[in-house]
Length: 167
Image (cartoon, rainbow, N blue to C red; front, top):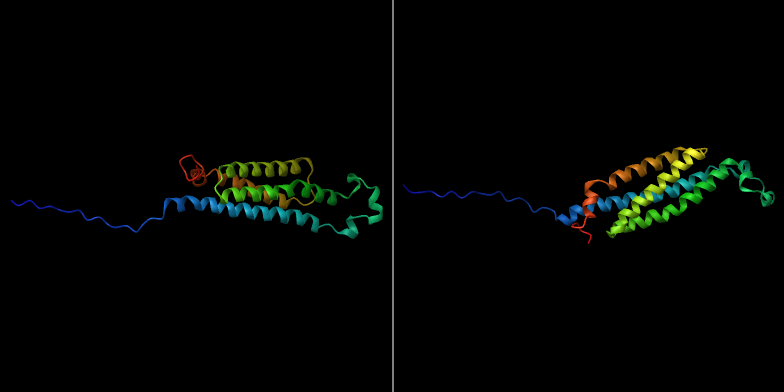
């Protein structure tokens, strides 16, 4: 009997996306999220200064010379405190976004440090000195918590492992 040879036909699949491209999209997405957070912090500082009504909340300029910080109205104090604490974080957030764009190994650590500082300052303001309007700080805290969870996802962690893209 003649032996028949069957050749298994293999289905040709379309070429898959390169592994490097698949690994980089979470990092690019994180960079965009960090830049959005920097814009949000700028908005937060600007919002607190925009709700100050100079005719109502501020004394005349000639009387301001002898004022101390505690003599200013609470809304002005809150705006100054928030701007002093959160403005440097804009630079830190942009630096961590640049670290993610260029896949610096320290980019992940810098981003986690930035999120920790944002959460610490927000909680300190929330506990020690509740400001007049808290909803922008609540949104910033929720956004930071989301970023911390996303930074610890496997897609982002895979890029920054020793055998990943960054060496």
